[in-house]
Length: 592
Image (cartoon, rainbow, N blue to C red; front, side):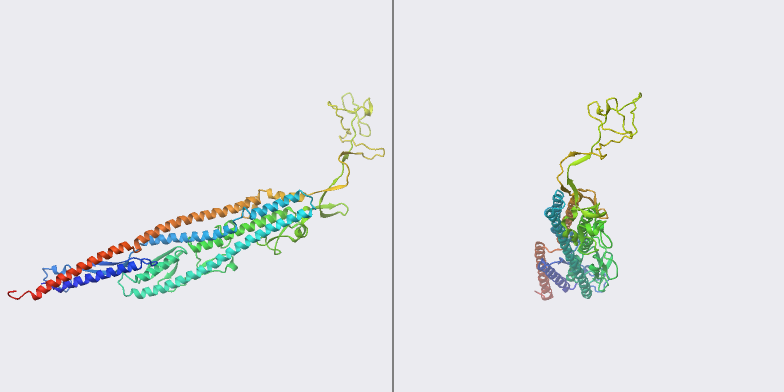
């Protein structure tokens, strides 16, 4: 006969497992709002006793007593989908990258918001208008020339302001990147410490199981560092985690590796360069670190050294520098500064010998001290024989020219050839010099000698006679503003090259529109990428929650089922008790 108490053992084990199920269900409900918590479950299996085992409660021919040993549990596991986790971490790095890029670009946009309205376009237009007004006045009009200088000063000041504001944005995000690197390194240290705790706790668990709450914390860390760049991870047999970023092992179980990230001195190198402690560069294809590097180092066609060809802070700073430099070089050259820098320079850097940028461009002292400098041209002084700078002059006097003799009918030979005298002049025909030679319309010809040259009138003393063509002598001198007109015409030049990399060819005004459009296009591109990433991440989060997040209704139903299970097992114990009571107290007594 089988041992009666084996049934009690089976139901006792069942009640204990039901209580554990209730505990885990209650734990799931308690942590339904805990960040990073993963739904847990009890993994159970049907209990059996091996036929090869020593304990037997029946003969070898009858093994029925080995059946029906009840239920037991392997352990408490987490419900996660590693594929969803992997896809989520891939896409959340893109979301973090594009979100950071949008933030930085929006700050640049705030600075350049008025670029084409009340900003650089307007100040350039005002300078253009001032030059136009000055070109229509006399070059010695000091008042109008001063307005022109002031317009140029305002243009330079606006470029200086743009440079200052963009430099502030640059400094802000360089410092923010440094803070992010320090925080990232702190996360690596905390993950290594957590791995050490996991290893100690894992010792008390079966091979497939471990400290779930510590695993949740580690997964939160992995989710967070995945926003900085692409990562790969796997779990070791001792429960600890290894993590790689950009092909470099940054977390290796409990081992403290030389995997910290270091940022080079930005002021010294001029670029935001990151490298691991082992000397390997941080090369990432997505994530927050890539966003920082693209936006700080992105210099488009002007990229050099550690810079990238993205359109970031460096590019728009270079674009402003190129505008300032091109305006200065174009107008300085047109004004003769290449040959006479000490006399004709219109724009100069604030520091002597430096390259002109948006941050240091200013109106030259030469032009400030003499606003009409650009109205002067270089002329030869016939009295001194020296070249000097002065205004173009045109005397308001009668316009005169040489008075030439009218032709008379010439004497011709039998072949029709004109006969000339010793003085080289045609011999007159029979009518003499009073018979003028005319064309078919009655217009008089001018007299020419045998060499075909016109013959001027002379007075009795042999002096050439001049005649007045137009005007009367007044002695007034009109000044022509030819140089300012030439400077003004440079604004209509549509073949100006901006940048030695030929970033753009056009006029000053079209270049301003080009830069504004490029900023808008860059923002539009990153916004589109971000919107796609956000949708994907949200969908993956929903999918992960469907698998891993506790759900109140589901856990409530489970608790009802566990209660029914518990009640049924309890009823089984009562039945076994009744059976045992009958066996002990109701058998073997005659007459009962």
